Image 1 (cartoon, rainbow, N blue to C red):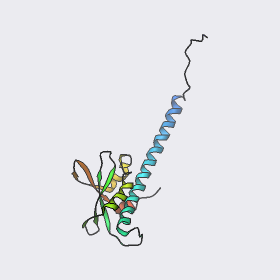
Image 2 (cartoon, rainbow, N blue to C red):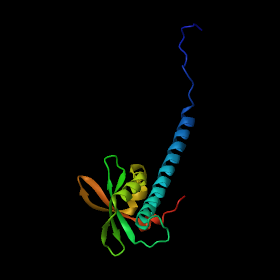
Image 3 (cartoon, helix red, strand yellow):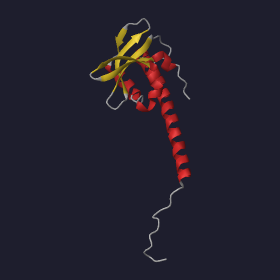
Image 4 (cartoon, helix red, strand yellow):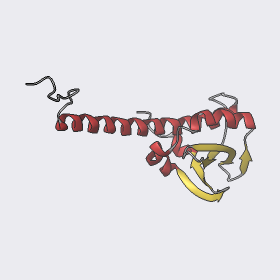
Length: 144
């Protein structure tokens, strides 16, 4: 064999081994995205409760739905508008909305299969989708 004979620059796993590893990683990713979506939906319900009760888990509150809008990156974002059990509409203080949005933005395209069952479409605003998010259903989601 001559010194000028081309050789592989590196070794690769065979096609079946690589395909199996990719399939496993994608399935793990999908499961992780779904779990993160469930967790962030529960966190959204808790964030609303905490905003209304000053973080006191035993204090009464009656928020049942929150308004969320979809950003240009497909993440959800709280507007501060919410509805109580009697159907009345309310607004959170700006600081509470800011705190909620730290977590809500994890509800995005990757977890759409989770949160899409928790929302009702509202009329678009500023060419962005707007949703009525069911806090009661979100709070009941399993953590695992």
